[in-house]
Length: 346
Image (cartoon, rainbow, N blue to C red; front, side):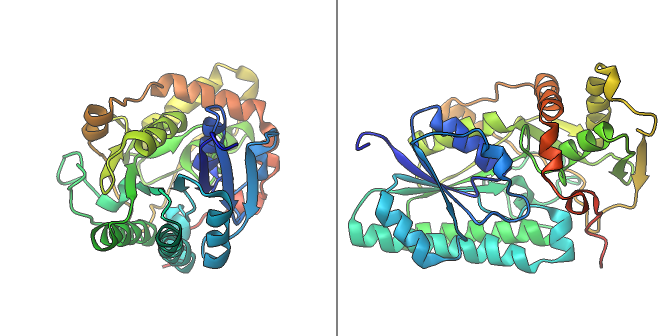
């Protein structure tokens, strides 16, 4: 396998990570998946994977010694870091795991790669997957955040991701560290844990339950299909400029209530899945809830000729179909973890 490119994906059993694993395997990469298998990771996401170019290590990115051993054993050319705590509501209830994984974990990855690179002289780069939430609430500005937009995170989750971005940028400046940061908008698609909005809506409809929507449902988000995100990440790894950060998004926004009604419409087309108890209910808003996220992704479009290929209408239809055809996915997840409302303890 000397001529096959080897990559490490941290958090490869999660939503975006598992989609990236499959995307890269189809393109003949050798993929080493490092995942501690926390609550949002799910082996179901890669259940049909039987590939000699894939290996899974159950490990925490905070285990620096083990991570360094994996680097030395496989000599990957790329590390994609997707290991993260990502749910805002959970970060409100319990910020500590977000600090541990999203900041300390990134520090350990940086130190491991720095030591590995110094002692082996081998070429390697880090593609760190961040978020548009680091830019904060853009409701008042009415602008789309460019890569040089000031960071104004609102939640403990967003602050932990912003902290990691700053840490990486300091390593780039001080150590000439080979890293690229991606700041992506809201992802959707297959394998997403149902604490997030789209799979939560689908789960509740398929289980004949009301759909809870925060406040009046007017919060605005920018949505991108996970496969479009995976294409962008591979482009960054192959042609992105070291030391830069790139926004990845659709440049199109939709309110939560309009998105909810779109999903209901798609499932109504499959009449047998709509129960009598399915209805939209408005619930108390999340503390510190950002009203609008919006990023300008012209940089990656112009520099790398990337653009999203999957429109929201098609993407939502395919996502609904995936969950219907993989109803066992929901059964593989604890109902308590799935249904419990979080982020209200302040």
